[in-house]
Image (cartoon, rainbow, N blue to C red; front, side):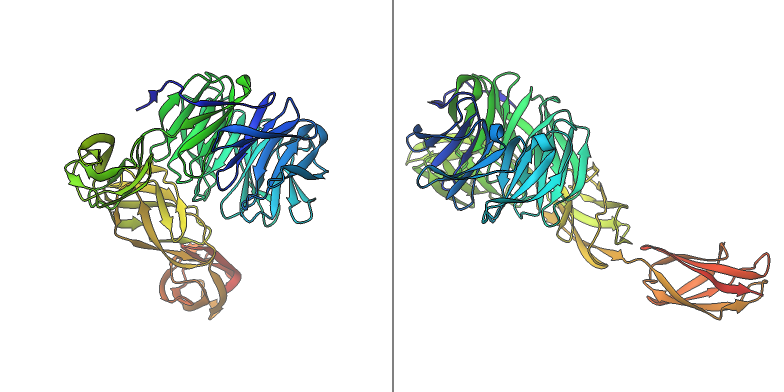
Length: 543
């Protein structure tokens, strides 16, 4: 349920027209681009004050910090360049030319590459951080705005306001491998820590889209976000924060349920939220007030659902938790808990059979409710259909069982796919492609514990190498041996376009009986399997 809280946050004055911020990996410093004053403000997060302001070339917009925290890179829109900022000396050490109206940029997880949205050139430029030069340019749609890279560094997602699309770039080949359409001015983009989801704000559509990175499709949306700008995801992947330009507020979204749980008003044209590494504070660039404001993460338990069998790790956020001596889920003590600091506890749910309050005992006597936790039935997979399919994927698979209503994904080996339909006793999903033929385990991912596992076998495309004998009577009835590859899942055999009786001997051999033919002459032999169809032209001749 969404709540609205009054704004109780520190305000840190920065430069003119601030746009985007980035935080160091240790959380000690926040860097803010001031587009209007051509500068970068550096904020000490301990004192929550600006410690210095660095002048940069015209129109700084996007900024990103390397994984080692030693450098920051600033996209300078006005001079078609990227400035390199030494975070130790707080000095600009180099300028990288060759961009075209750069807006936003991101750094690869290993720190070796920068990906820059060059809006003026309708491309994403790739910069080597070792040589500080542009090494590739990837043409994309009109008006690329923001970019985000997956945690494994294999894909970059680009929002394109001019094309109302999101494109996916393969970082190994520097090519676009997927184009998602149907957006209305897509703007902010962020990737979940596990790389399974990408979140995109629709500035013109008033919503947040959820993209499945395995299938490159939009699988869910969160509506009710007036003119959303930037989006940031917590490092535990449980919450997202969206700056709402339309009503000058910031919303917190529960990423387990994809629902707005909290909205804080009182901003003036907020643009960009940044989450601290400990997930306890959110720094929001407030463009209209030329400040950065600091919010605390909303109190509660995350996630707030789990199986009756217990064992769910739960993050409890609140105030004054440092002296906690006990945590209870209803009347039962937590399986275990660890007090991280005065604002955060990690607890593990015990085995129960109902939804309960979570109570924390502070000191020896004071007990208070710090959240709720909802217990769900265990999920059981009993059967899948079909049990095999082509290596190219694409068919519909049905999972049957019980307690499946909270299914969020079906895994084929290590590939997770979002289901197209979810019921308590049945889930349907599109089978993804596989790199090679063979069996893979199929499991369901739910908010509860999942039991049972099935096997889906990917079948390669069949092939025919010989048909013997190759001659026979037009009256039919001649036995023939078809030799080839990947024949074990054969569903039909036709000779001259007419169905033939057959029996599978092995993965390489089929015994068939020729059907009658209307006239003498060569006939095609066709075998159809789960993996596809193979035809041997004129392989059998009717005489």
